[in-house]
Amino acid sequence: MQVTRIVFAVAMVSMAMGCVSKREVRTVEDYDYSMSCEALVAEIRRLEDLRRDMDNESGFTGKNVANALLFWPGIFVNESRATSNVRSVDDRISHLNRVRGERKCYEQASRPDVSSET
Image (cartoon, rainbow, N blue to C red; front, side, top):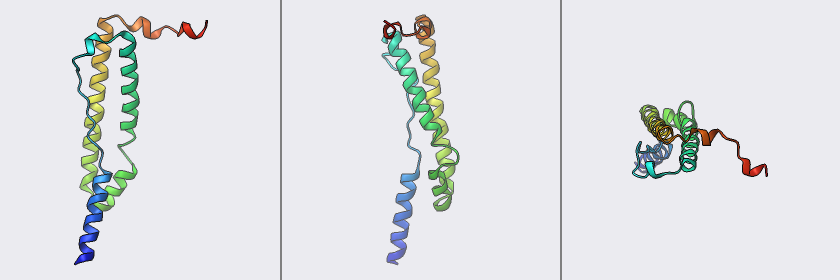
């Protein structure tokens, strides 16, 4: 009986550690329209890095393999949560790109950094 409880506890902890965390981001923040063009570009780059990290959490990962062995429905939970996380980041990037377009920030983002050449 004691061994069963220990195995169950280890399985539960493993499943909790193997789950994709909920890292959805808000599409619109109050400060978006007050950000400088440079800040918008920096935020979009940070979100693109975050999205790459999130992509690494879905598909054939160690977490999903562990879930398949211990608790196979966890795969579906992980994939659903990872998809939701990525979609929220994509929506925020789209919103920030719209803000950049409205503020005509694209010219500044495409110029080479002249300060490093002098």
